[in-house]
Length: 336
Image (cartoon, rainbow, N blue to C red; front, side, top):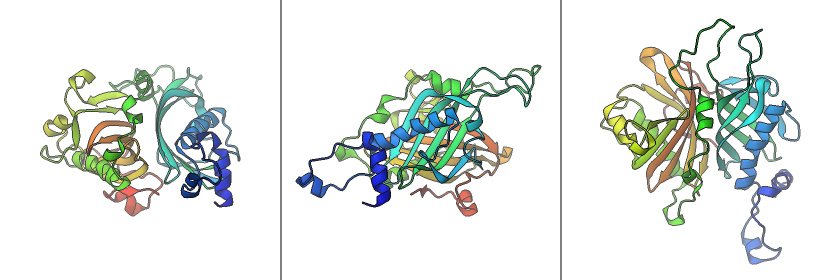
């Protein structure tokens, strides 16, 4: 084990699997894990607490850590949500990837902002967050990528009510209470998919939505449910949705999405059958794009659950982590 990974193992001691006695057969056959599931998951909480405190310490962050929010690279520690977060929220849906030392999550934070550049501070409000962290060999956070879905806020005391008919994302996600328990249920070993298969399933979803004709391949279970920004947008009658995941694409949303590009698969959990991706949904006729973080639960070759937090952005925007060619590409990228 390298010196760096010794430090990482020490930093993640609480998250490591119990080690067998030294000299045992299991100890000889099983290489030590640098950072197991619980260890990676703990970085999400540590990051959110650091952001709320405004403390980008050398203990937690690499000196050259790179940070983007909503596709824009910013200085780490005093810009974006780092300037306005006052506390972590309550929602946590975390996807650790022990192979790549990345962890992705859909979470909430409490942000206290002003009603204008010089106006009074508002009461803290929940913000929905799609988040990715990469942990380096020294056990520090080296990459931070986040999409912050803030509530619509007035500019000044005389502004009118929000123009959107939908609830604020952070408040809607918080109102969900807790993630669907099935996300955390291990898939029986005999039914588990490989990493490559899970990446392929995420791409099948993007292919189904992109340039949908109503007659494409729709890889959903009969009880599939999709949540977007805390709202049920497709699912069973019991979920409150108007149409099922397959039915919705067969009967509506035909041709609505003209391109899905920069499809970056950033965390894969083979044990639980969950895959997390970032992507952009373009709407060419109206010249704007959705920038989103989205995850999928895969069971027996079909998607049973979908959840996303996203924002509307300028048409053609890129993530800040891809080359121009990758940003324009519709091919999936397994980020390692």
